[in-house]
Length: 142
Image (cartoon, rainbow, N blue to C red; front, side, top):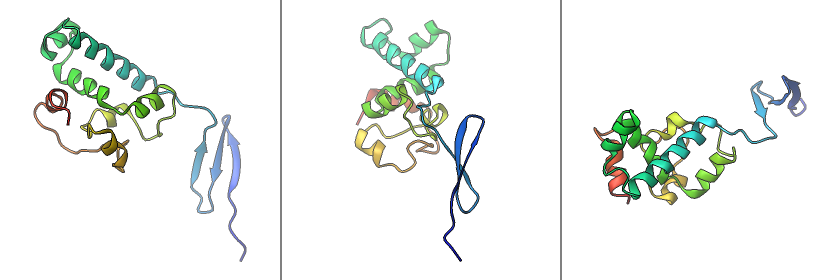
């Protein structure tokens, strides 16, 4: 028997590689900017600036002014703790396909080295949460 070969096909303007076991893998030649992730990052850094400037004294005060849930504000603010390389990758659409806003809204290590060492960083690091998950991360980054 000869070696199995992969087939390359084109469908819908995208190239896909069909591996010998029949699994299709999409190949993208351009970055895939996730507008939801970019918008959440922009919000996170804006809110952090507002807190640091003293416009709002607390997360609860900011959430009330923005008319959104304080828990959501906490989870979004946590995105400011992402490693600069990760933020840059998201802004330029170079993040892994598995990296989603939902996955990043879950608790993750605040240490940049730890973020990259985690195998499942992009898909949901920690299962479970405390009653106020972001306050711990925001108030005392380790």
